[in-house]
Image 1 (tube, one colour):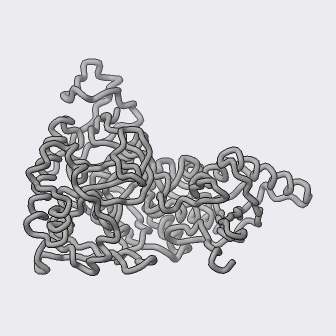
Image 2 (tube, rainbow, N blue to C red):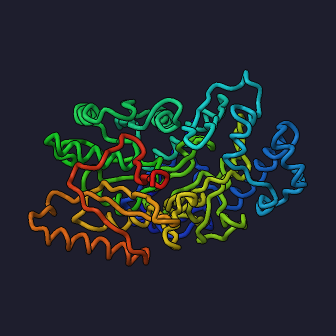
Image 3 (cartoon, rainbow, N blue to C red):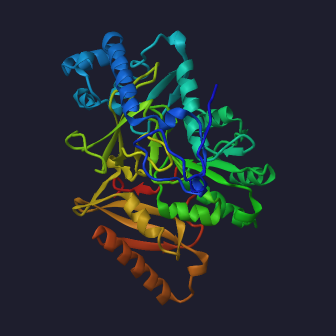
Length: 466
């Protein structure tokens, strides 16, 4: 039976004392919520003891029964008995996407095929796709993780959630679906695409929650306005569940202004389980990682050295509660940092910072390291610019080069050429102030850049053709 624990109104209860000695801070009234499970606020020491037990059990199973991982562990001279504290996880070799591709399609399967009830498959745009298997228990736990995330965001029975993530081989749609179903929310499984229908359904069904990529949410707001609607007045959206791609605080502000008052970030990878690995609480000061199912680390992507809390690097996850395909120290390529302090919301699970991007997305332009998110940061702070942009990669002799195309808002379009020249100079100057790199900017008309009904394609690579 699911237990719900109410966060009390601390301001009205001066005698309130938490039973968790590590809990710091207080929860402001506007962030009151329900805990889905008491394990969300488990004592930190107890959580670490639970992680260690589950890690050792997972390692023992893989060491004895999984040919591939057993061989890797023996080659690294690591035995389950060598893991006596959580820090010993650093002795275990990393797993990468290449390991999954080498074992394509189901060479990493850790149970008999008769126990598998589901396969999900990545897009495989850079080689063989990655295949992830689920047992009935895995699906059940995945459902609970997403229920925790949605509940933390304030989704509840009586809400109508429109899920505009793709359904099928992609994990996004079904993961959120399972969590919402477990909470008892009414689901509109609209899947991705067909934007006009999405808007009509949201309006007619009075959807209170929208789940999709943040870039598609911005597009939906834009399209709704073109349909003659005022999204904030004509739609009933209260909560947004936005993930599957990195997004910034600037995007959050635009979503609040254009679409819904409470946009939340949710994180996951197909290789781990899909969405539900981590999500924001009402305080929005990082994404809580459900550490009773995953052990997160941050490493130096070049050396593999484990970094301390607050240090930015590559996210690594070990699954400690999966049956079909457990993974040891899986390198995500996602750039973030870790905060292990309990959150003022009362949850003691560690938090990761908003994903900055992928370390393999980093561009080397004329000797300068550039993340696409840095360019997005500049563009989305400028009121004259729209939500749509593209980063165009080209070759300039032996060196890579880039330019940026960005739409101008209708209100900023001017018939005076000089005004647009000045705006172009302003954008280029702002980018230079962040990157210390001169980047050519093309200002284009509103609506002229392609829209995406899933993950936005922000980087266009023309280097091979140049």
